Image (cartoon, rainbow, N blue to C red; front, side, top):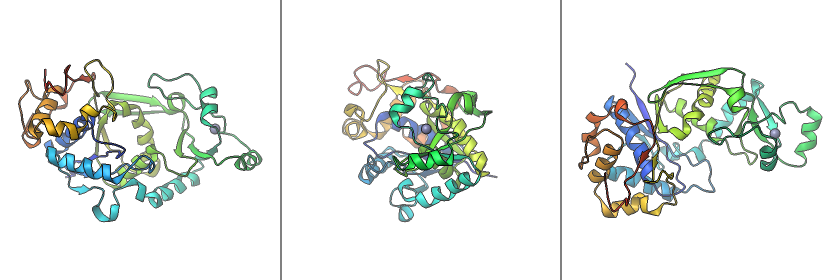
Length: 318
Ligand SMILES: [Zn+2]
């Protein structure tokens, strides 16, 4: 029988905020409620913004909350769970895509992309119109003299469908709704979509739990899994945690970062508050992550975003 393998995949570009905590908690509860494992991967592809000191703080916060993992972390096995140290692996898979004839250079600047792109999608993504899709070798050679290209992947005109553990059936036509996407930036850094698909597969992840802002990334990642011959993981997206007025939380919300909350509350109080906010507990009470496992049920979690109480963090729960 195969075991569920979930994952934490923080980006160490700042302190952990409460939305990150909710996501980690639900990923952990889902895996643990099935007797599964958790892997901790460090998504530090963007080495300018990422910092291992932040990562060590995140790991300390997770342990303080009782959210343990079985494998990975910044210092484990010579940093091999850090995306910044996995470039050789991504290169190998990128070469496979090149051999399949799916990769082409894109010379568009950000301004050109905005000017030439099809209208905004509802989630704010641009649909690439294919400006560089059919350049001749001469045009490519000419343009290379002016600027290094990004690498885009040619997507097929077909639907990719999957059933989300929380939001149910989800379908996207890659050509019509996404367009050819960047898999390697002009500075050589591999794009999130490619790195995540490869890492989830190679690390044996079978279940991805993350915020619903990434729901529309899933068809691209599933398609990449298919190209490489990997079985895709199951995806479960969760509602986002917002301020009481519906504003999205960000790493700039100092009041909501865990280092401040740790001075105000115990781990059980924070877990209890999030357990109530996510619908797992009928009413607020302090509880450990371990004791919350038996309350986990996707059906109890709301589909719409979850609002924090007004006056949070002074007031813990509604
Ligand atoms: Zn282009």
